[in-house]
Length: 284
Image 1 (tube, rainbow, N blue to C red):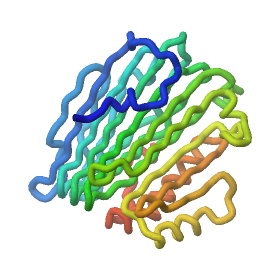
Image 2: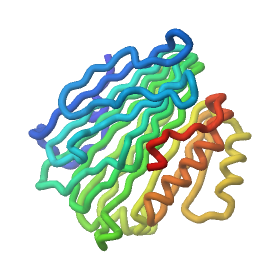
Image 3: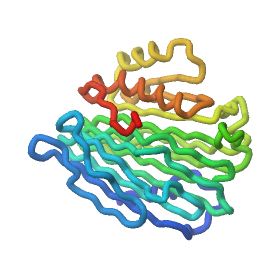
Image 4: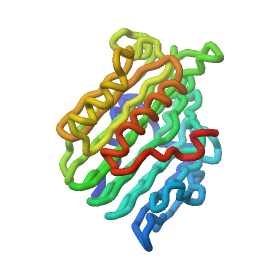
């Protein structure tokens, strides 16, 4: 039985039962007739996908759509993606996600990613913009079988710097859990509020932060990312066993996203065995 990842998140935010959109999307990839196909798709509420693209042959590129364009207080989005053995899929979004200012209720998003032995999954959504005053709880549960391959990231942009809006009000609770062969390997809990946004021990007033995970990785990939970072402030990378974790802070979300795309291009050949082939939507 899979746990409710949202219940696992650090929600000390006194949340109430959701009253807004309740949207669910379940996707399953399988390898058939020489390529990866979207073998399973079920959805309810405002979550769906575009037709698959195949810019690199057998790998399936898929874009998740949220037609309302943003998440408001009381909304709950639940996404599950399963990659069966032999499949290779890249999942992204056509635009930045948005969490709007809350009237007091919590907005929630939960994601469950399951990667079977011999499968490769890339979870590469564009950045999520968190408006000042938003109250958000997100959870990602990543289940990796022995022999699975994965690259994924989460990028958050706080406030709207171009409109002179920071993050002086609101809270974002995030929870990542990574399981390898059924065993909990890594858990990360993070709470960003106005104090954490401004503090030197927090985001230092930087409007964008992100984390990238890659598996399996070696000291060679660690060295390659370290070389890419050089002396750049606000960027770092580490290797825990065979899981590479790269983090970055920036005052511009587009610049942070560009950095993560560079890291992805460096890592993809070794981690997934394929040269980088960026989704077309990233260029628009």
